[in-house]
Amino acid sequence: MSVSVNFSRRGLLAAAGAASVAAVLAACADTGADGQAIDSSADAVDYDTVINSGPVAADDVVAASTWASAIKNAGVLSTGGTKTSEVFSLEDPATGKVSGFDAALAQALARYIIGGDDARSLLEVTQVTSDTRETMLENGQVDAVFATYTITPERAEKIAFAGPYYSSGQSVLVRADETGINGVDDLAGVKVAVQSNSSSGPALDEAAPEAEQAQFQDHSSCVAALEAGQVDAYVVDQSLELSEVQSNDAVKIVGEPFTEDPYGIGLPKDSDAQEFVNTFLQTIYDDGTWNAIWTATIGAIIGGEAPEPPVIGSVPGSETAAATASATD
Image 1 (cartoon, rainbow, N blue to C red):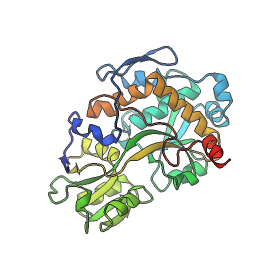
Image 2: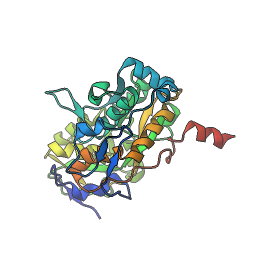
Image 3: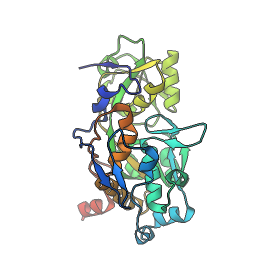
Image 4: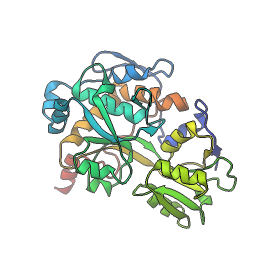
């Protein structure tokens, strides 16, 4: 069924299924690895409490990883990401603080490695685009990429992925007064914006091969083209669309997601980072920190209970080095 959705800040319950995650966990209170209680009920979770209450790796665990040791010695985790996504990673211009689901995971990882009581101060975010993510990792400009980064086998030839840690899906954004486009099935012959070098183009080729694609450098450029009438639709991960409609009444989401896009943490290919970060992810899955982060960020927008996080290494391109080696023996 096709639906047209205009989201308000607290009126996103209809989109709870848009994350493309089937199962959900009941809200619960857990204890983090440092002994502090993590309460994942929607009314009790405070963002800063969550990112400063998660687990901290033991010194010998960090020392065993060359990648993590370098970050601890630097005293900061340098990531590629975004500062303009209201749900996933948004910078407050007044304070310079970055908040959101991806931002919180990165801040929690930074504290897991470095320790301390101020996770925000341990993270440095550099704005990336779909075209620059792999390059910045390959060049060593950043330690990791948290950027609603869909795992694909093609990308995994250049970099490593930890996760997946979340799953979204490609969806359609149109102008708020649009009545003729109600989903991906209506895009034949329509000029559609996509971000260059993103997973949206190939997904649109498969779902709507007769759509006319127009490539733009980044999310803001695609939205601007849509608002200006240069294109009549924009296809991108629905997570980014959810962020956009929080503050932009000129656009709306139509239809349902037509793909499942698992998000991973981009990491240097030839390093021990993947194993270390996957251990971090499994730790915060198990101790309730992931649930609490979801509740303090995405859950504060869409309501409902935290979904079950995806299984680490479960999608093509996210296989661990050990599993790959075993498969080739």
